[in-house]
Image 1 (tube, rainbow, N blue to C red):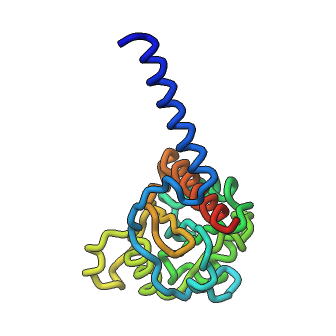
Image 2: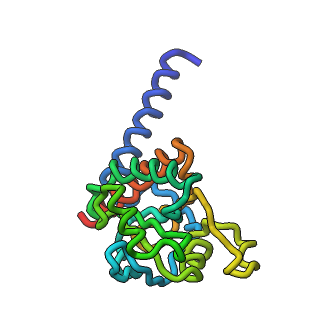
Length: 208
């Protein structure tokens, strides 16, 4: 093949790529892959660090990350929430972004306890919300809504169970769980931040 033909082939390939890129920028949703959600968030009612009830209606239209931890954890939770702080630092100024940190030890993590923990984190608790509630409701959310725990644990007596997971769920504005991430791996934390920004930008384009 002559150099001239190679030049023209290369030119038209680059032109097609540029054209596709422009379309993805000016047409909302163009080029988005249709990926089925992992799950969807069921109705819930928990109590935040200020003693106020939080339901699925309060976060409707928000992109958020859901995690499960407990305040007295000396194992994975400190590392996990150090990584979550990176998510918070980079995304907390986004109007439609939230973090929901649910306790998996509600017997210990009363409203006063999670308030103390939230204060120690020195974050805006309108953007990073700490939640407690009934154990069965919390565990049901972890397993059924967010799919963050082994389903086999559903067969056990809830009094004998304890969720201890480093996985996070990224939820879109429609309440669909888009993807699960390992909160202890920096590469996955960075990927979550990137994916959350894509969801936020997608919604911004829709509203324009």
